[in-house]
Image (tube, rainbow, N blue to C red; front, side, top):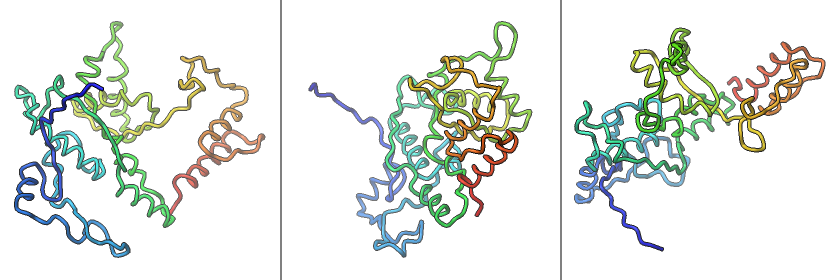
Amino acid sequence: MTPRRVVVTGLGLVTPLGVGTVATWTGLLEGRVATGPVRSFDAARYRVDRGAEIEDFRPGEHLRRLRPAAAGRASQLAAVAASLALADAGLEDESAADARVPRPERCGVAMGTTSGEPAEIERFDDAWVAGAAGDAEFVLRYPCHVIAQNVAREVGDFVLRRADGLFAYQLAVVVDDADQHITHVVRGEDLADNTPRQLLLQAALGLPAPRYLHTPLVRGADGEKLSKQHGAPALETSDPLKALQRAAEMLGLSPVPAQTQVTDALAHWVMAWRALYNPAP
């Protein structure tokens, strides 16, 4: 195997000894003890009640676009560490209005996960075990929902007005959502790469940004989503209940008798969904 050289040009440290390389290194030289009683949660029921916690952590001082409250703590720590590493490496674009903007041609991102957001998972599990409705916002605080896209580099200029004079989808959907005061958007994961472009347009037009959730798709045996574009057969509109029964089955919902009216079936599945996925406390 051919050996490869790896050069570390920047470090981003967020540790119990301090935030940043200087604070951490100073703490090491001074022999500072970073462990102590756990204060972030009640550790009385555990055999060990001491640990090394990161205190006095203020992510807003290091993040420009990611709203700290929208992400779990693990995501905040990772984002701040990455920001500090870029600054330490001197990879910012000095000609940019904001000196902390990295130069895209000199940067890359490698995403990795371990246990994700353990605090968020435990909070959700505790609520579920106690019989309370789980916090739906838990999903939005998970790391996969705060991964950024460099639109300029990965997409480039995108069309706002087509050659035939009509406004393109990206601009139309942004204006339409704002006009209807849409606050939450739930759609398929195949549209996830459109979201960064829409966020850019919302910011440029001074419009509020909805909360986005992208769900998995129903796919065929070939891995492609079921759609007309990939040859999926059209729904049999003469028997809509049959198609709805199959959709409900995919969602883990119980079937209804064959003679059920469509309106009654939909009402039944709404209640079943609520009982299965969002039970009342």
